[in-house]
Length: 295
Image (tube, rainbow, N blue to C red):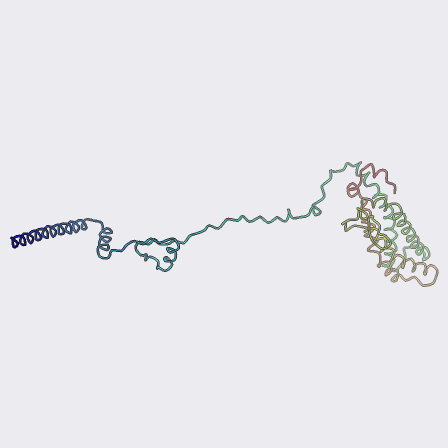
């Protein structure tokens, strides 16, 4: 009985082995057939998986960035994702536009507003003091020109004696001194309230008053008076010595005396009239105020 059971077991084992072998053969045959008709990338994956299966690894972000730095470009291990550098967009900062030259200018540098044109009558009213001043100045110009021309020609005008020539010069000095004294005592203080060029400095040479603040013209006319009289005093002294026969008149010496203050004199005669002109006066005074002014 035992030999029979042993033989039966052997037969059962062989039959099971035969079935198992047949199943494996059919499975491998089907897999090979399926792989023949699969796409190339699938066949490559199946082949690599069959020969060297590799489990997938999960990595965190930090490990991914560090491993990506170690792996050369184009070679990424299976199961790992290639780490791409994170690009952080820089905030766009708008640059402030630099102020233009015209906008950065101070208000003091802006041009004065243009005033409406004057009628002929209004111009005469505003220009009245300039006309009156120019009348005296023209007389001074005539005497100066006569004497300076005589010095250049080294001879007196025809028919004029030495005594008369010297008297003309001394009279010119007297009238100019009186003219300046009246201006500084009456005219300049009135105009200096609003017009800086007529302001008078004190004994120490300092200026005061709102009309002189920040103005380059402050006391310009009074300073010209001072410069004129410096040269005029020496000129007068020379004429008096010639008049008193203390020295002989020499035209070259007289010309040298006149050259020391001639430029500032003519500048003053022109600028004082311009300061009293209609266009400048209307900037500081109304036409009613100008009408009440007395020279």
